[in-house]
Every structure is written in structure tokens, then in C-alpha cells.
Length: 194
Image (cartoon, rainbow, N blue to C red):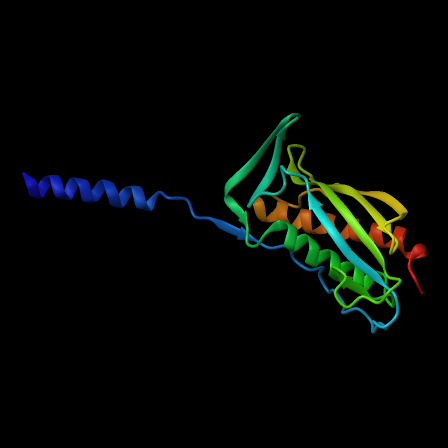
């Protein structure tokens, strides 16, 4: 009797282990065929990527989906491989460095010469939407050394998912972030030191 109880218990435990869903981890990719930024003079004033903030509902380890007009869900088994804020910051640095060259882009002011301008931004949308699109959006501020706002603007992108599943969502979010960075760079360029 004990032997059969042992095997029944073992069978139940093994079947429970086999039904545990796997976690998938995602990274934002670089633009296909991305070119390295051209040489810049880092001794001249440039652009400092300052504070980047995420809306609280986006500051999660799981991918965020808007499943209805007022409902948002955070996925449990589809997660960012590293903190989303870090990935967005790195991708933005890469995109801006290529888009505003020959102006140097600095991360957080480290090594930035006096006279550099600071870009702060707030990301209020970076999620999947029930309409089959990714939503990327927020606002930015360009500040001088004294913290005075020189320019401000908004960014938004709404790329369609090119297929089903979470990989398609991550690809659309990455494309939307690149598009937003390109638009931001165009809006910032006239005010940047040359």
C-alpha cells in the first residue's frame, strides 16, 4: 500500500512540474543595419541624456498590455531580460548618437563639457494595445546648464504588430522607440550646439 501511495504521489508531483509554463525574456533590438555614429568631437558641448522616467504602470519586469479601454495587464511569463528603463535609455543613446552627429551624446553628464544641453524625458506609453498596435509615447524637455527649458515636445508612435505573439509585440515596440528617437532628434537638432 505504501509503495503504491509513493508512486501516485510521485506521478502527481512529476506531472505538476511538467506543466509549469516557461518564462520568455526579451531585449529591445538595435535597428536592422544600424551604422555606428560618425566621429564626434567630445571636447565640445553636446547633448546629455539626463533623467528618463517611466510611468508607474510601465515600470514592471513583465510586458504590459492594454487589454481594454481602461484595463492594463502585466504578463507573468513574458518579461524584459533586463530592466526596461535601462534598455530604453541605451537604445535612445544609440539612436541619438547616430541622428545628431557630429554633436556628441553623453550618458548622464559623465564627461560632458560645460555648455552641453540636457535632455530629460518621461515615457508614458510603451505597451501593446488591444487594437493590434504597439503604443510608444511621452514628452521631452531640453534644458540649458541652469535648468531652464529651451525646448519641449512630445513623441508618439503606433506601429502595427507584424504577426502574432510577444516577439511581434517587442519588435513593434522597438521600432516605435526608434521612430520616436528619430523624431525627437529632428526636433532637438536646431537647438543643439554646433
